[in-house]
Length: 373
Image (tube, rainbow, N blue to C red):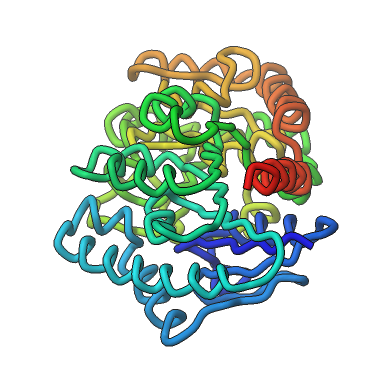
């Protein structure tokens, strides 16, 4: 029986919570695999069947407070002093969890989400699979972060598992001599493949942005969207307001959302998904879910978006306001919109698959690490 400790600093409190939903899906799918005894160290919330929480000594309250403050990456970017204080406390709490896990008998693997959560493994004899997200690459720009992580990786068998192939090259440059770099894409919940989009959706004129509301996540939207929405097109924005931004009247803001509302109320009827982000994206899960639901996607031309969108086939990439305007006009054609949505769904099914497919990829990585240990 493999003993696996899954660690994360984001997790949904309940079924209506958008935060860390992918961690819940990850844990649920890994626990369903044969020969896994899964423990989870993450903010408190509903546990999937077969998963046990291992929080101790005030961890639950502290992690909940960290989420309310925006999370470690947000704090390090926007409130560095507070972020460093919280990062130190996080390392102490994670260190205790790793020490407890290291005393268990049998074959043990730590499955760590976000690079900073691997730092407390230093000196402990535990193989590690480390999931790398887009925000981690920004973290590597902090002074001293790369040497500290190299010190951790030097101690153990390790696989760095970015959830997108485009991150493989920079990770290999920093850590390829110490750890295997193996891209493992996140899966997609079956609910998105099950969505049926009727013909009127392809020409509804309703476009959707699902994003945390920050300047970087909205990116070019406020500049490029002016004059393109508010008459025969409507733009709907869903997501938590994390920065004080005055939104123009042509954006219909609906506040935070959750997967149930997206699957029931939005994805079946809107024309498509927009993301004009300039943020350090990894592989935006909402883009994959929208594509799995058969929605065409228009995205800013970032490495993370190029990793998902084959321009002109399953979506459109835009680099300026004019190309954005032309993309919207192109998808005003119902036949084009429908064909692009179907192509996106087929690509996700073939190249990414479900969370159970992802879990089987993780099990293979666990076994490789245990073999090396």
